[in-house]
Amino acid sequence: MDRDQALDLVRAQLTEHRYLHTLGVMETAIELAERYNADRDKAEMAAIFHDYAKFRPKEEMKKIIETEGMDKRLLEYNAELWHAPVGAYLVRKEAGVEDEEILDAIRFHTSGRPGMTNLEKIIYLADYIEPGRRFPGVDEVRELAKDNLEEALILSIRNSITFLMKKNQAVFPETFYTFNELVLKNRS
Image 1 (tube, rainbow, N blue to C red):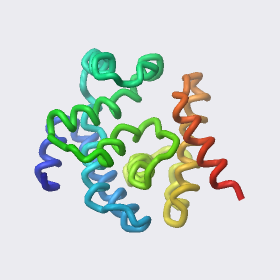
Image 2 (cartoon, rainbow, N blue to C red):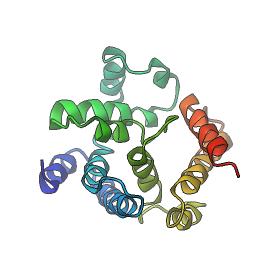
Image 3 (cartoon, rainbow, N blue to C red):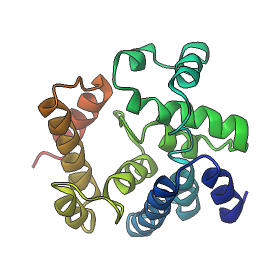
């Protein structure tokens, strides 16, 4: 599937605002892939499809999580997490994408996971720093991403955890595990 076909499929699933976000994630992912020696085409495809399931009904996503052997703990946390693993499933089923690296980058773009691949880090970070994003701390992460993928990822995860904690929302365990692994690995 080429870029235009993928964008057409995704556009039909998204609002105009979310589609523009997706284009920003795509361009950012391509830049990061080129900067950090990742597969440009896989980064582009994962970025295009990263929010494929974003606007699916919660009941549909819940059923897919329950019936397709996904981590049931997801159901205990904010439903905003669901579109990533459900999206990976639907992108395989509906769009015919079979590349596991692309699917994993989609699957873990909201929660992260210990042992993230370079591609997974790029999609997580591209989603966080794409040019349309405007929130406290994003500019600092953008600057870090120019020179240090790992440090930018650590700061983006820290910011996300802090944001959720300030709102008294539970943080998915894999996100904490990802943060801890990165901090321990990158300790000077």
